[in-house]
Image (cartoon, rainbow, N blue to C red; front, side, top):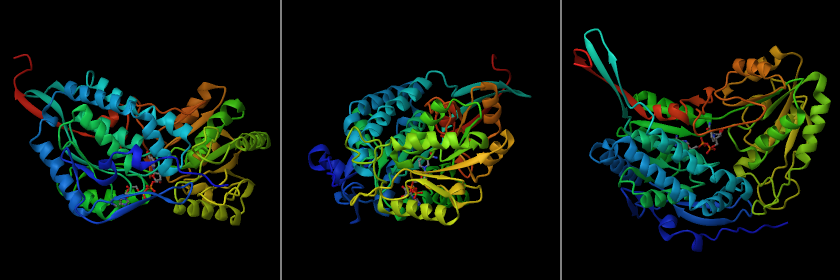
Amino acid sequence: MDFLDRLNPETELSDRVRTRFFIDGDWREPRGHEMLDLVSPITEQIILTVPGGSTADMSDAVDAARRAFDQGPWPRMAPAQRGEILRKMGEAIAARIPLLSRIWTAQVGATIGFTSMFTGLIPSYYNYYSDLAGTFAFEDVRPTFQGHARVIREPVGVCALILPWNAPLILLSQKLAAGLLAGCTFVVKPSPETPLDALILAECAEEAGLPAGVLNIVPAGREAGDSLIRDLRIDKVSFTGSTAAGKHIGAVCAERVARCSLELGGKSAAIICEDADLETAIGTITPFAMPFSGQICFSQTRVLVPEKRRDEILDAYVAAVEGIKLGDPWDERTTMGPLSMARQRDRVLGYIDAGRSEGAKLVRGGSNGGFNRGYFVEPTIFADVTQDMTIAQEEIFGPVVSILSYSSEEEAIAIANNSQFGLSGTVFSNDLARAERIARKVRTGNISINGLQIDPGVPFGGFKQSGIGREGGPEGLEVFLESKAIYFPGDAAA
Ligand code: NAD
């Protein structure tokens, strides 16, 4: 079966988005000659070739962001004024939801239903931080031994935002909306596989009246990315991506004491208790482990089931997965598209081989589903997985779920915690007190009970090797702020 690419870049994208970078409020011609091929995960054909940033382009972008921070109006505006521009950016994005959803689907193969739903949530990040401008304490006054101090939260400075390919605009917006409210300026390096979303965002920023130099966007590969994180004019790096690249970026930042936030990988556990309502549990886990082919950092990829209900839960889960329709992501009826790129497909098939050879039981899936083109991998379930197996420990970032059995609540918690990661998790039980007791003992940054929630007003991020820092909520703003104390003699009222 052959699918077609439905995005027409020539007619749907502006010339500047296809051929330029956004630097200093201007659409600049590339200074180098590097080109990035955007390959369709559905047809394996090149959809579009766009310029990739060189170290010289990156340096120009840093220059502009530095000037905008040191001399421009943005960091000096009242938070409420910045909040107004944030709201306008949210409106400009809302007006482009169909286009942004189509670009997301075309670049990475997520189904159009999935990208439309999640693109629809993006304005809420801008709205949330716009609202927070009115309530967050950017200053407070405290009595001291000899007088009082005014504690001011200032923007941390010029920030490099480095992004992965899986959910490019959401992951950018989580960082950017918070950092803009803080008063920072930015150089954004989208992933070389998904450069388009951020450039469309630049059009939204222009429309909203963001001052020149506050937001600079240069899609690029690792070499130019590396020059960005090493640039002494960058005060903070905020990175989302793999744990391996995050460790490198963290080490580079530590060397020069640059601020650094990391949103990294996960291997999240869904704990199904003996008294759980199966319909709720399976109904939650299936969409959050499988669609978008499992390429979501908070995928619930380890399903922990009580021994006594193992067969019943496994049957229910397999039945639910049978209902997933693998195919053309442009078709509204499809619930799972291909993996995003050939190297992802190869990586996932490698993990499936490892699962088989280490003795896990392949219950369903495991192949390319019979598609002769496109990076397809079927939804795959392994049962009888033990904790020491590679598929139970490493992040696969594909549609592969491991079922592990446990015999007591303590053992379920121990298995959930037996991971280098600590990003997300879920607990399913009809006894909310019990579910909360378990949730409190699992070492992850986020855990949901009888469902899976993420909200712009609540911090998201990882324990252990899943990262450092938080995005969302006031905590997501705080990572873009520095605290400064100004001491005064006498008491505050004097
Ligand atoms: P990746 O680490 O390979 O790349 C991410 C970004 O970092 C890309 O823009 C890449 O060009 C850049 N990069 C890589 N090395 C660099 C270097 N030395 N200097 C500067 N930039 C560098 O990750 P990926 O394959 O794009 O994304 C998949 C990973 O992202 C998965 O591990 C997934 O769990 C993780 N992820 C985490 C979250 C989260 O919020 N925790 C969200 C989405 C994805």
